Image 1 (tube, rainbow, N blue to C red):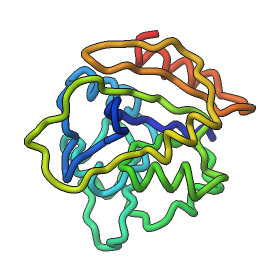
Image 2 (tube, rainbow, N blue to C red):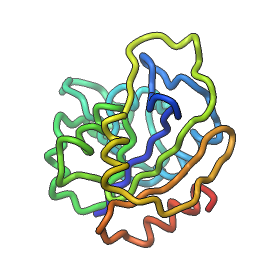
Image 3 (cartoon, rainbow, N blue to C red):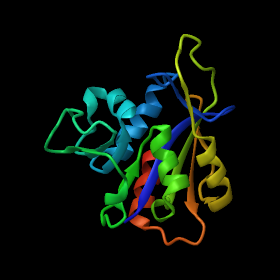
Image 4 (cartoon, one colour):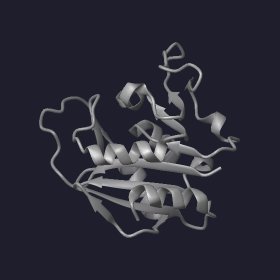
Length: 188
């Protein structure tokens, strides 16, 4: 299994969300995310799940991490509510981690066996939406782990105020098929 973390964070403060929304709108970045996640096993939190268009991703099997066992998903055949990441310790298929902040933190700081092998680090370099209200979600703890345990394997690729770079965990064997797919999706 290859675990891939995909995020888009704000350059100055590692914010990935404010309240129930992403505090910027970059359609090309959202499209890139959908291309990468299409057909994959994807782990998301409830808030992130609810921001997905139609609460789904094409051909994806989605695991929604929430403490509410009665939470209703939009596609009961391909989407599953989970309350813990324990099921992924022996998971054999590739797994894409797509947020929110609490989900990333569990993979990066509390579950050493689940530390992703690949990180797709998208950094938004524009202004935050001043209309955004609510609790700030940032992934600074995950960025600290990335800086310590990962190496950059691609140049920075910039499009529409978003710089994308791929990192791999030091000392890990990386499935070349997964890496090549990610490289093609970001345009490298």
